[in-house]
Amino acid sequence: MSKVFLNDKIVDADHASVPVTDSGLLYGMGLFETMRAASGSVFALDDHLERLFASAKALSVKNPFDKQFISDAIDQVLTANDFTDARMRLTLTNGPLKEQDGKPTLLITAARFEPYPPEYYKKGVSVILTDIRQNPTDPTCRHKTTNYFPRLLALNEAHMKKAAEALWFTDDNRLTEGCISNVFIVKDSTVCTPPVETGLLPGIARKRVIEIAKAESIELVEKDITINDLLAAEEVFLTNVVMLVLPVIAIEAHTVADGKPGPITQELTNAFNEILK
Image (cartoon, rainbow, N blue to C red; front, top):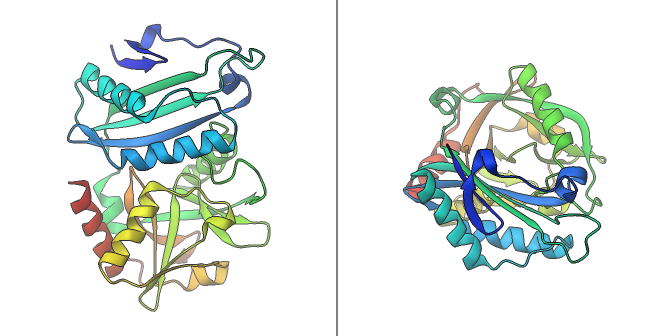
C-alpha cells in the first residue's frame, strides 16, 4: 500500500482523508507542484518551494509550513515508499472555507516515475491549438492552482486527436503556453519563448532551459510570439520537469520544418539530461 504525507504525518493512502468542506475540494482554492525525484532527491526543489510560497502569498492561501518542514516531508514520502525515482505532487489548500482559524491541508504523494515514451524524443510529437484563451488579468494566471479544469479539457481534446499537448493563446493572439508545459521556438538559430506577462506559469524546466542556453552561448529571447511566428519556426519544443525538453514536429496539420527534432532542441536536451544526472 502506498504512503502519503497528510498535514503532519505519513499515512496509508487508502486511509488518508480531507474534510468534505475543504475549499480546495469544493472550489479549487489551492496550489500544487508536480516534482520529479531522481536518485533519491527532488530536482530543483528550492525552485518549486519558492514558487509555491510566492503563489501562496499572492493568492492568500494559508501556509503555516516552512520550507524545511516540507522538504523533510518529501524525504519521508520517498523513504516510506522506497522510491529513488518518482513523480511527486505537493498540494496545499486553504482547508475548510468557513473556518477562519481552520488548518490548511498539505498533501504530498509519490508514484514510481514513468518517463514519456522514447520515440517521443526520437521522432517528436504533435500539438494542437486550443480555442480556449488565456486571460493575463486573471489573478490565478502565473500560479499553479488546483483549478485545472480548463487545462484538462484542452489536454483531453489534444489526446483525442492523438496529440501530446494543446497550445494556448491570449485574447490578443499571443502564444502563451501549453496545458502542462512551456513553449519554445527556434528561428534563425535564436531560441524564443513567450514572456511571463502573457500569463504563463513560470515553469521550473523553463527556467533551467533559459540558464542552459546562456551557459551554452545559445541566443535566447523572451518576446511575444504570434501564430505566424510559430508556423515559421525551424524548431519547436515543450518543457516541464517530467518531459524535460520534448521536440514538436507538427502543429495541427502543419509540419515544423523538415518534420524532425532539430539540432538546438537536441543540444538543450542533452545538456538538461546532464543536469538531471
